[in-house]
Image (cartoon, rainbow, N blue to C red; front, side):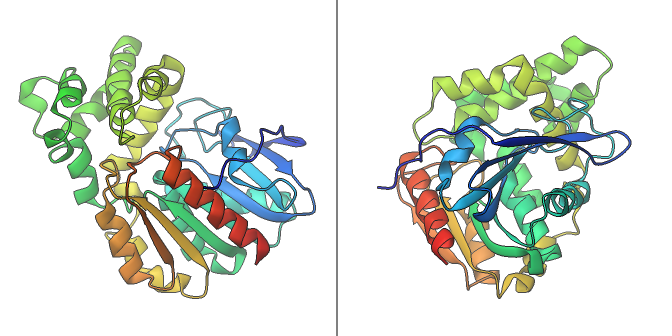
Length: 314
């Protein structure tokens, strides 16, 4: 079973001004002359972590990590204005051009798979390959399953905490009810809603629930950007046409791809990975029999590292 590469530090960091409002954090690590790979984090609003560098062989890869608009080390924090899927796709192109990279491997999971697909379908000539995990196509039925009705049948205990901030009269549309609170002028209302929203995802992301993950997702510094930005994207349908990522999957035909999907992923259930594979049969779909949603689960982690190693040799 493939293991993460040893921890490394960036050899260069950047702060890129991508609009009058937004500045994003970008870092490079590994081999400056290696094959370029960009890590696309989840959420939206999740930010990058140091261990994300460890998917990649630092001798073979020039590893690019960036915090998307409004989260992580990017500024302004938790900002929703000028924050759409297409702003982020444009930011990825700005990063690529600024760093002088002709084309790169794009690696993303969960929301990161959404943004990676949007990027690959928009810029296939700049995409050497796609390594995707926990497929999220941001369709209404996916959002409804996790935030309205479906996953609560599996996690009724965690669900009670998720719905606690929302009065019974508003529970017919929980995403909209949360959006009102996450955009409230009252910081306490925003904070309480953000913690409940974020903990729900943290509590359901692993096949075997992790108290450490719940604690991280519930931390005030993480939760506000994560919950606000996620909810902002979801009430706006991801700023995509209905079914856009599947309809445009033919644009990926000549791009090598690996899809790693946990069989028991309840955050982004396997049907989305299956639908994507049907639309993009050239991709290698790998189902991890004993995994949920998180990239850190052993089987998923190993498959992702194997895929990155394979792409490094191509």
